[in-house]
Length: 217
Image 1 (cartoon, rainbow, N blue to C red):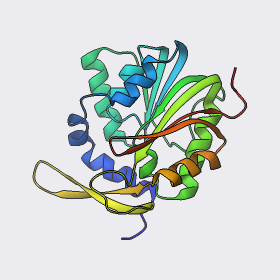
Image 2 (image 1 turned 120 degrees about the vertical axis):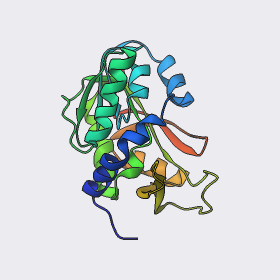
Image 3 (image 1 turned 90 degrees about the horizontal axis):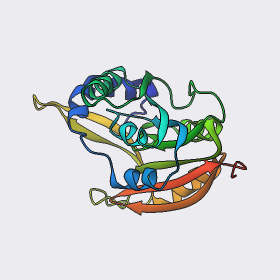
């Protein structure tokens, strides 16, 4: 497998984004629990927002929500969902390693099933550091990535792969993934400038509950 660039990954989702968004109707239970246990905040962030299904959950706890995704097509699908369902969220296309958000302003964030699409270790750590930068004192975030514990994988250690997305016409489009083993996921969280409160696995995914280092109130 050749080494993809972030542009390659973005263009893949620009190509499949409309169909992809239609298959993602419901929020993940882990996200719902995390948000339900959180206090109200001024600003929420859905990083790698996809069709904004998790931004809609954040809107129940945040006065304002920002949803960001690298794919133009996916952001357009999120706008359509926002208009259809009527939840308040500001949507933008952007780079997870360079967030267009002021430092120490986000009280609650979710970064779900996105970091595993960044094709280098440096980019993944940079995105976690950006998350740490924008989190406000007392702010918390939930980060997730696909795990080797998923029943479709046989490997025990982290690895890179592609997983096909099948379009309605039957065409298979390969999507890049960095599949984490649980220890490697925890290591990356700790390598970043985030403080790690909890790491767990659920339904074939690694999760981390994190905050910005030194910002606990």
